[in-house]
Length: 261
Image 1 (cartoon, rainbow, N blue to C red):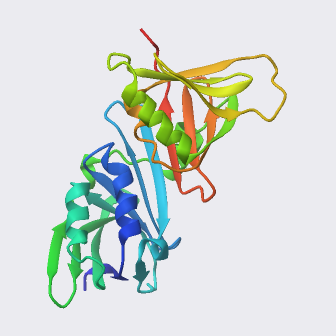
Image 2 (cartoon, rainbow, N blue to C red):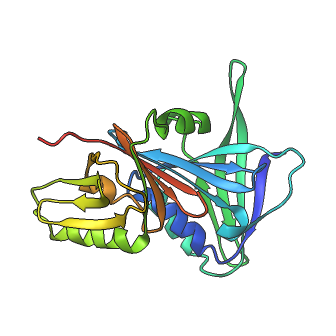
């Protein structure tokens, strides 16, 4: 008998919105079905690895109800094209459907991976089969690597809150800025600003007494476009800036510093 995880699903708009978070960074995605924690989890990065995003969503928040398993696993599912999968799921609209993940074991010496083989979406009118892609095309990022290395900072130079309305404003200002100017600067001083070539935008008023030290970090505008609109707690370090969604801590985006020419 094939190994499988079986879900019933209905009104999965939240899941589609969650998948869309990754589509601006890469066309493919390594999706993990974390049965013990009842959640979907994924991490992705751009070609230069200057942007890394981790996000999770609980099964029930995504519109899925899982059939309990006697031996729950964490299964890696290779998705070759995120947008195509989203369009397939959208064929079921708001009607209830079943979502089955068929999986097998991959052994490499003493280590074992649980890898998705195919996805089956089905209701009374429609059945769609989707083959999973090989895990070999993905560079896997473990939870420990992300937490202890990628998003970790030896020294946190500044902390502040960045709200959704400010992100919208930054995106609009970047669109109005000089097209040849590729960077924006986050500056923490008496207050926190985002600075382009033609704008200087206050995003947060420091509540603590300023110690007189300025901290700045430059990133590409295109990299900032990968920060989904929402409320974040932000940490600035020497070589990276980390956005963590608030209040649920379900998404973390790490963007590396760039040096201006």
